[in-house]
Image 1 (cartoon, rainbow, N blue to C red):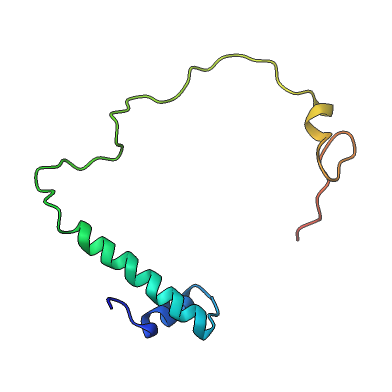
Image 2 (cartoon, helix red, strand yellow):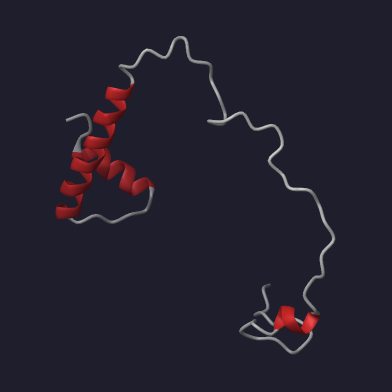
Length: 94
């Protein structure tokens, strides 16, 4: 095993998760499988591969701006859970 139950307990504590003994056992096995797979990927020779941020060469993936009719105020607020016909009503935050 690449990861111990103590490591999983520590990560769960950092994530503020409470794991039962059964969940701890399952999670340890799953994380061990993930780490084993990562180790297998590290065996690949990537010395001739250029680092990329995208799989495909993308220069400008944004669409052109075009003027379109927008929603009316009534249409915009009609689906809100609480509204007064002009705006959304939300609880006061102090």
